[in-house]
Length: 286
Length: 173
Image (cartoon, rainbow over all chains, first blue to last red; front, side, top):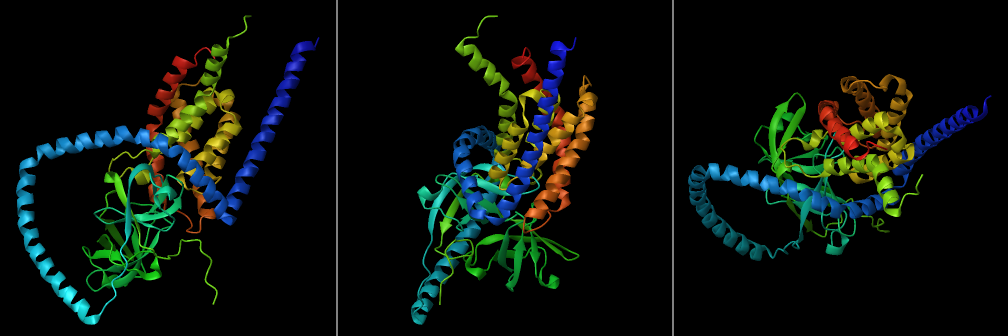
């Protein structure tokens, strides 16, 4: 009587047992991976670089339409306000010409003072330009994927910026792609100077659009104060513009960034030759 | 029955791989720069919607192994603690499979309503897992909650697209 239907139900039981086993062992593997990820970062990083390298060509193609749409919308907007913009630009031009003459005067003065002091100039930086093809958002991590890697001389710890200001730094470099940890990521900590007085603070990301200033006397910051890198800890060169203080509110000093993430299409990766805290060189023995 | 030709069997396996492939596509879509101001920090969890959808309608085409691999890939690509998304995807699928009787032949609105709870659980598990593993601790709840709200708001749209694809390409499977 039981014949085939009994076999089927027994097969079904076996299948569900196997599935349960697969589920439980895979859950075990995820926990093991989380532990490994915490202990052995080099191995995980290599895996991340390999996967990012493999996916970047696809992202490159997929990001094309989005950037095209953004360009078209930008063009239409510009056309609509072309008259006002023209007037504004004329005004800005007049103002900038005045600044230019001032800058030239200051540069000459600076030069003569430097020669007077016999100051050794700081080494310049080498720049590589890259396109942003991936934007890792969400509530847990903030980074972008760019189209240059080791093959273009890009390495972990290098500084990434645009004309407006600081974007972040390279935290993972593959062969032809890299990941840039944004200033807004919860793991980002940057030594900065605040305002004209140059008060020292740490700019800490919290995965929101506006990072916060830590270890800063609150009375030492007012909305509108400029925030620039301080160059402490040798992770960044001093003086790169970051943003300005947006609001000071019970213990929280939020910073509005100069670089608009939604307009991030091209970035520059700068190699200042800084040791920094991200390179993997062993500490020097005395 | 006639033996299927090579082309037919390739075609068949390609269709069977669609749930995993579409989840992957949604994952990459979430990574593409949108140029929309303010969206990036609250990017919705697109792959989670796909995992949930296929676990209800085509569980046999998206195995635990596939879900695990997709989660792993997401962790590697987004630089979140490795294993955390895989864990969330696995648990999501497990919960849905356990409630197969509940989901059986229910209208879409009911599955959407259930997703409100499943996605909340998924977000919470990921928040705890990431917070425990990362040195910087727990991420603020604000962006996470916003991302969660956008995720459940967009589920009908993504679910509709996936349902259309299923009807068109996998109806007879």
